Image 1 (cartoon, chains in turn red, green):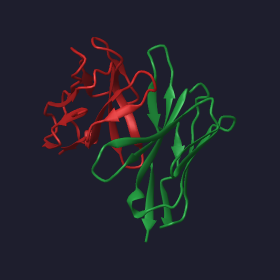
Image 2 (image 1 turned 120 degrees about the horizontal axis):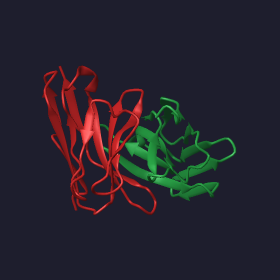
Image 3 (image 1 turned 60 degrees about the vertical axis):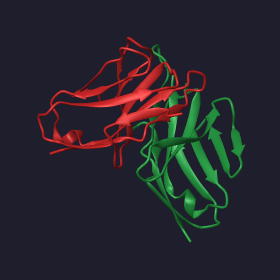
Image 4 (image 1 turned 90 degrees about the vertical axis):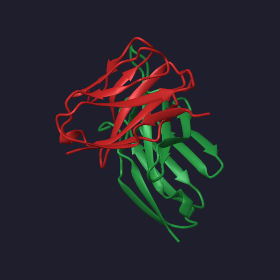
Length: 112
Length: 113
């Protein structure tokens, strides 16, 4: 059972470039999330989707966009990357009963 | 995660108990969680407690919830070197668009032999 799969694992990107982080889940969870993790700040919610076809903004949505065309996939796009977007990005999905989040292994992004 | 507060570091000796504390702000939160993150990995759920409970015990882990003070703690008995990791508390906030988890900054637990 794969759970949550993220790609790429790691990427170095020039400022101004467009980048899409991919996330796929095989648990048929309705809700999915993107968080970024930065030292001393914990995890901050970027965008979320409660069900296929809907998305919402989290705490730090600026500079990011998401789409949810189906239940399994929830890509995160940086239209024009900036150095402050250097971070580790985690995708997650949640069990509707308890709200437990299941996390991917993370995508480490460095913007130069 | 600025509304969920944790201290950043905790150091204990192997065999001692560890207590990691967390304060949250939303009294309507339904579930509170403890996640563990090992180096280079994602977060894994350790345990959770429903907001109408005061305590939950699971093997070496004890969670205490004080709703009046909005304080959550995680006690790890007989701490081992394999418990070294970052521990995150999180609260599930309910809204008109469903529940979202808000995380604290994480507490880095260092276990010395």
